[in-house]
Each structure stands twice: as structure tokens, then as C-alpha cells.
Length: 129
Image 1: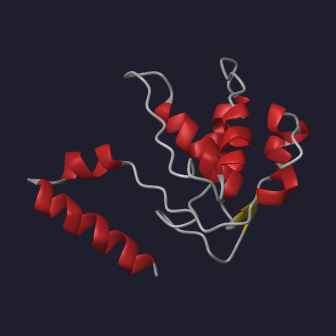
Image 2 (image 1 turned 180 degrees about the vertical axis):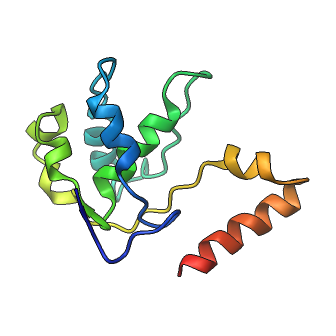
């Protein structure tokens, strides 16, 4: 994994967590979601919500999407053996965009109330730009 100049904690974050997931014996390829997401670009369906029950991989899914779209890293080797690599849109969107990755639960656990949480999110992102 080659780090780029535009990496950060929230903006174009590291692909380390998704890379760790790929090495896990229990990893199941969910990269078909990337194919769907690529088809939704520039359509009425471009706003997506990935919701799943508790403990069903929302964080891993967000890390996968971040690793794929994130222009801060070259992640082609991470995806070359996954389903998405066979899709016609694979190279078109791979590592082409700035990604903002926020885990709201992290902010909630560090905040006294919603106003503080929103301020912390804003400050975290502003400090990276």
C-alpha cells in the first residue's frame, strides 16, 4: 500500500483497517456493493445509505468503500482478487476521489451532547484541510 500526499485521519484515511480485514480468515467479499455504487454515480440514486443490523459489518463496508474510492492511496492490489475487479467500472473509479470517513460512534463516545459532537466533527475536518 503506497501512501499518498493527501492522507489523513478523516479525509483520505489509511486503508490499514480494510487491508487487515482482507487478511482475516473470516473475510467475505462484499465488493459487489462497489459495483452498485459505481452504477449509482450521477443518477437519482446517487445518495446511498448502507444500513445493517448491529454487528453486521457496517464499519468494514465503510472501510472497503473508503479504500476503493480514496485517492490518498494506491489500493489496486487490495481489490485485484475481489469481485469488483471483474466489473467494467473497476478502474474508472478506483482511487479517484477525496473521501471523508467519519465513524459517528467515535464522536458520540467522546462528546457530552450533540452540539459538542458536531463541533468536534467540524474541528476534526477543518484541522485536516
